Image (cartoon, rainbow, N blue to C red; front, side, top):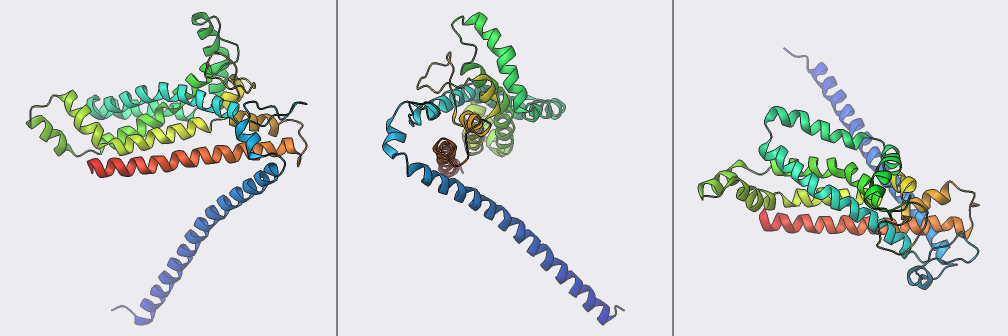
Length: 304
């Protein structure tokens, strides 16, 4: 027979342990929230200081970005153009290869092949980005210059391709999980109606898994937009408003690195430009994430 006093002691210890665990988890959650709030607060304060000296008309109306020159211009669009150009090249590479790899792994690969191929593909995500940067500079660029003689030594094409290779595992892995989660009964129903295997994949499976696929693509876009080392090494540091991938460009993250590692004095207008650029980058990724959530809800509603 269990001693009532011992049973009460065990319950008291269990309750105390549960309370400590709950408070520890709460503290971890609050720490992440406070850290995010502190980052946003610092970014907002420094950005407001920047806009106390530079008008919104200059920031959004000018087409030149030369805050470190004697003739200063504060138009953000050249940096935005460089960021979007390299990101678009990366997605153009990663989306078809990543999605086709996901379809193969989920629908065609044997279990043994899938167990080997999927972790091998995901190893690409573990390669340091600085390695991709130097790979783009010393390997991709010379190779592409043989095919495109007018390609500059620093350009948007090489880092865009390197970023595309880097984010392929993000699209393939998440999309494969989404495709694999589609119920088998949907496939069997399609086969029973006379659909072929390819028709079932492209008309039934992929639309059903579209919310997960869309989420993987948006995460990959956010990763490409926020990439720093690859573009800082291989894209050049020449902000220009262009859609030509053959010429040097500068992205928003590369400019932040340029000023952060340079000799710009803290507290100056030139130094505060990195916070203005960071705020613009934050808003871009925030809008992308909002769009991804709406897109995911839309596909869930359509196919869920």
